[in-house]
Image (cartoon, rainbow, N blue to C red; front, side, top):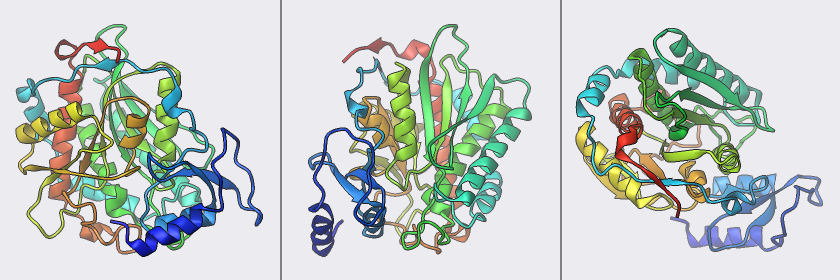
Length: 379
């Protein structure tokens, strides 16, 4: 919830800047590069300086930086695919989820949070991305029985996004299933160089998805459709990494069956643990299917929650016209008071709670990659 005083401050920030037609970034009077920022679907985008953008972050106001992606929703409409009515691969999925472990997640998150910050423009943000890629490649190299590759998705800033892809067994099928998290972190007071361990936001989602990936690789997962695992750069700066990937996929006419995004999975809060499912800026049919996956493969109940505008990277896929869904650690968006501070450390993480989300990630990868359960259409 944004307090009235914050809204007044936000209005003062936005008024001096007039939304312009598609343009390249330019400089403010103080010499700072201006970025085209949108804070809701209903308000025009505004050109803001980096200082002003950082103030939005400190105020907890969510936004999309659309400077390089002003035409994301204007590109050719992508194909749509039916969603399975219910899970049908319980035996296979349960054989996988029995192998999920908390210790690999803890080890990976301990290393990930040892980087002073994973801010997307920082050297340590780039280094953390390279380290994460090395872990993904190590998992792949440990198994000779799976057709999977990993690559960097480069950006104009130092930190790269990462894409790992299981090739589909059905020849010629490029209908892709995507599981994702964001790898960057931020200190809301000192974005460039302040310590930002980012254990929950979103180190927890990063290792949740990584653990699901590890188990699938180790078991020689051979999906009918291609299945991709994405770890995005620069989420905290306005969903920059995921917007770039979604825009590239849409520009190329890539077919995406659905995206399940995990942002913050390790801090259940003080109430009874639940599995939060975002119901805004997501596809309702896909969200309904995720509920069924939780009922089938997790051991905690789901609860609906609202995340708000530009809450996380699923919003990029939704804006691009693809089906997307969102996982969250509780039904309360404000459940973790530590995020974006030095207090967001690995000691605060409940890895058994993370494991619940890994179970559903595995279920989503298996169930959504079966060709027999879906077909395509144009909307």
